[in-house]
Amino acid sequence: MSRAVVIRDAVWGDVELDGALTDLLGAAELQRQRGVRQLGTAHLVYPSANHTRFEHQLGTCHVAGRILRALRERGHPCDAEQEAVVRAAALVHDVGHVPFGHTFEDERRIFPRHDGEARMAHFLGEGTDLGRRLARHGLAEGVRAALGEGGPPSLARDVVGGTICADLLDYLARDARATGIRREYDERVFRYFAVRDDRLVLCLSKRGLRRADAFSEVIHLLRLRYTLSERVYFHHAKVASGALVSKLVERASGLGLELPDLYPLGDEGLLELLARTYAPRDPVVARLLDDFRARRLPKRAYVLTRGVGLAEQAELVRRFHHDRAARERVEAELEAELGLEPGAVILYCPAADMALKEADIPVELDGVQSLNALGVREVDALCEQHRDLWRFTVLLEARSSDRASRLAEACADRFGRPSELQLGPG
Image (cartoon, rainbow, N blue to C red; front, side, top):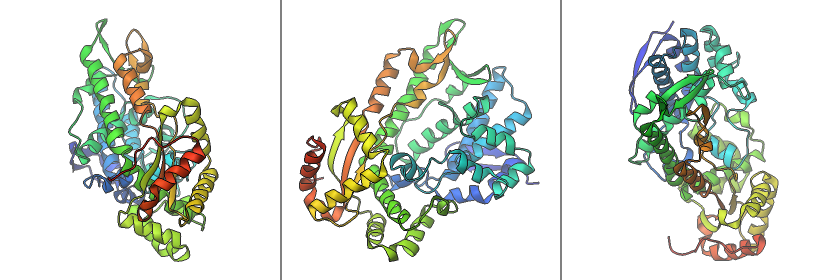
C-alpha cells in the first residue's frame, strides 16, 4: 500500500493525496500525461504555457476535494466511499487525452473525442496499469460510472465534469496563470455549492433573497472563461499551429497511423513517431513537420465570421467541419489552382455551437433552473460574444505567403464572399 503524500502545486499549494490516490498517480497511463501539454500548441504563442495534463489532473483532484469539503460544511456530507470515488475520478478524468487531442478531436475531427466510451473503457479497463490499480482499491466501478459517456446524472459526475466543476475551476486558474492573464476568480465560489436531488447546484439566494455577491462571482467566472477563449484557445496563431499539426496527422493517417498508436505517447513522442515512421515515406509530412518544429506557422489568407448569417454558417460547418473528405478535396483544388504544393492550404472550420456551456449550470433561485434560462443580461451578452468567436479560416503555408492575395481571391470565388480579413504586413 502506498503512503499518503503532500505534493506542492504552483496553483493550489499543498495537495494532499491519500495512499490510494498516491498509488493511482504512479500508473503508467497517468505518468504519460506529464508529456501532454494542457493547451496543445498554445506554448508557440504563450511560451510559458507548458503546463501538462498531469498537473491539471492533480489540481482537479484537489479542487474536487475542496468542493466536497464545502458541501460537508453546508450540511451535505458525502460518505467516505463516495468521496474516494469522486477524488479518484477527478485524478484520472483526462487520462484518455492524446497529444494535441482537442485539436484532432474537436476542431479537425480526425479522431473521436477523448471522453468517448471506447477510449475510456480502454484506459480504465483491467488490461491497463491504471485499471488494475483502480480495481485493487475497489474504485474501478465507481470511477467508470462517474466518467462513462451517457451515464445517469449524479453528484460525482457533476463535481468532476459538470458545468462549473472541479475540472473548470482548475483549468481556469491554471491556464490564466500560465498565459500571463492577470485575472482570477474569488475562491468564495466554493461557499455557493449545494446539493439538490443528488445534483450539484450553485445557490444564488439566501433566506429568500437573491445574493448579489453570488451572482457577480458566477458572472466573473464566465467572463474569465470567455477571456481565455478569446485570447488563448482561439488565438489566431494557436488556431494556425493546431491546424498545422492536425494536417500532419491527417497525412500520416493516410499512411496507416491510427488512434491507438497515440495512446502511449506524449507530445514529443508523437512528433518523433511522425519523423521516424512517416516523414521518410511522405515529403509532405516531412515538410509540414519541419515547419511545425521551426514555428513557421501558416498565415491567414481568407476569413469569414458569424456575420455571414446562421444559414451560411451552418452550411460551411456541414461541408467543412463534419466532412473531412470534402475539406481535403477543396484544399487540394485550391493548391492546384494556385500551383502550390500539397499541404500548403489548410481549411479551418470549427463547430457552430460555441456557446458558453458553463452558463448552463443549474442554480437555485426560486427552485433549481439553468442560469442561462434566467434572462440575465450579462450572461446572455457573454454567451453571444462567445458565439461570435467563430471563424472560418483558410490558411496558407508561410513559405508561400506571397500568394495570399491570390488565394483570398480564389476563396472569394469559391465561397461566394470576399474575405473579411484585410491582408497586409503583420
